[in-house]
Length: 115
Length: 502
Image (tube, rainbow over all chains, first blue to last red; front, side, top):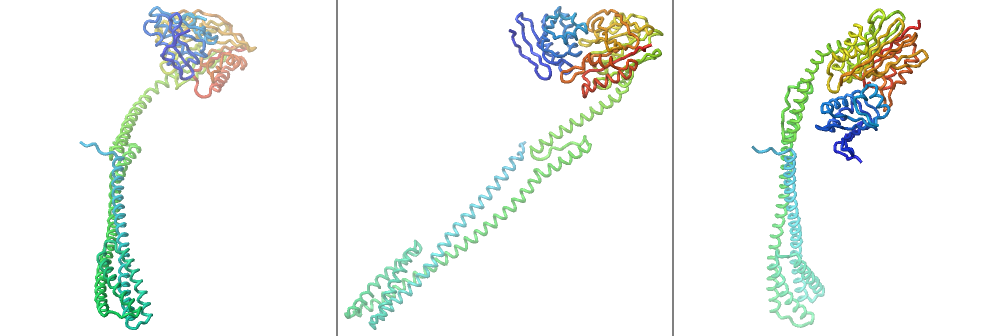
C-alpha cells in the first residue's frame, strides 16, 4: 500500500497525486489527459517529486488517456535533471496508446519502462 | 485631527434628533391636552354648580314664601309649595356637595349650617300651624333673621362659585392657547428641520456624488488623466477613492496597451515575415507529379511546424516536415532553422539520416523541455524509390491505389534532449501512389477524448483522387477542423505528393 503525500492536483481533465511506494521510491500517479493545458500541473508535481536528491522516481501512466508533446517535454526536462545526478525515471503501466507515443518518439529507450 | 463622521452615523444622529424633537413636541402637546381637558371638566362642573346655587337660592325663597303663606292663610297650597321646595333645597344642597370638591366646601358648609338652622325653625312653626297651636311670634322673628343669614350664606357661596367658574374658564382658554402655541412651535420646528435635512443631504450626498459623477463621466469620455476627487463623508469618499484607483489602473493599462500596440505593430512585420517564410514551399515538380502542403496553426499566426517540397536536382525531390514541441514565433523560428539546415544538408547530397544528425549538431541544445520531430524523404522521380529518415515523427504513409497504406516508421528518436543518431530507411512510391507526411496535430486532434487518429487520415488519403494533391490536403485539413470545432489543440501540417500513373 502506498503512502499518500500532500499536494494532489485534481482540477481539470488531468489529475496527479504523489505517494511513496513500498520500496521508498516516490511515485507520481497521473490520470486523464496530459496536454498543453495540464502540463503546468504535471511539471509542478514532477518537480516536487524530484526534489533535490531523488535518484529514482516512478510515474504511473496506468490511467493516462493521452499525452502530447508538451507532456513529453516535461518528462524530457525531468529526465535531464535526473541524469545530471545519475538518476532515472521509471514509466510504469503505460497503456498501449501511450506507449505508442513513446515508441514513435524514441523516448522508450531513454526512460526505464515497467509494465 | 478628528475623523469625520460616517454618512451612516450622520444620518442616524439626524434621525435621532428628529425623533427626539418630535417626541418632545408630542409629549408637550399631550400634556397640554390632558391639562386642558381637566380644566374643561372643572369649568363645566363649576358652571353646573353655579346653576345649582342659583336654583338653591330660588328654592329657599320659594320655601320661605310657602312657609309664610301657610302661616298667614293656612292654605294647603302654600304648605305643598313649602314641602316641594324644601325637598328641592335638600337635593340641590346634596348635589352641590358632590360638585364642591375642595373648591367651595367652607362656603357650602356655611350654607348647609344656615339652611338647617332656618329649616328647623320654620318646620316648628309649620308643625304648630298644622296642629292649630299658637305660633310663637319670637320664633317667627328668629325665622326671618335666620333666613336673612341663609340668604347671605347663599350669596357668599354664589360669589365663590362664580369666581371659581370664571377662573376655570380662563384656565381652559389658557390651556387651549398653550396647545395652539405648542402646535405652531412644533410645525415651525418641523419646517426648519426639513430645511436643515435638505441642506445637509445636499452637502453630504448630492454635492459630493454630483462632483464625483462629473469626474467619472469625464473619465468615461476618455479623459483618463482627470482625477476623481474624494468628496463627502467617508463612505462616498471611499467609493471615490476606489474609482480613482480604478482610473489610475485603467490609465496605466491604457499606457501599457498603447505600448503593447506599438510593440505589436513593430513585431507584426516580423511575425508576418516569419509566417510567409514558414508557408510550405512546393517547388517546381516534374510533369505529372502533384504536390501540396499546408499548415493550420494552433494559436496566432505562427505555427511550430514547418514543411517543404523541394526539388534537390533533376532527379530528386525532398519532402521535409519539422514539428517543434510548442507553438508561436520562437518555435516557428526554430522549425524554420531546422528545415533550412535539413534542406541544405540534403542539397549537398547527404543521406537523410546523416542530414538529421548534421542538423542536430548545428542546432545544439534546444532547452530543457524543447525537442523536435522531423522527417525527410528524398524521392527519385525516375523510379519512385525513396530514402527517408524519421526523427521520432509520426510515420509518413505511402498510399497504394487500392487504399492500403505503408508507414515510414521512425529511424531514430526525437531531436533535442540527448545526442542521437538516425538511420536512413528505404521505400518505394509506385505509379499512381501518393505519400502523405503529417504532424501529430492531425492525428491527435481530438474531441471529447476521441482522437482523429491515423486510421481516419489513412482512409481520407487512400480514398482520394491519387493525382490531385491540393484537393487531398484541403479535404484532409477541412475534415480535421470539422472534427474539432473551434481551435486546434496543436499545429496541423500535411504534405501530400502524388506520383503519376504513367
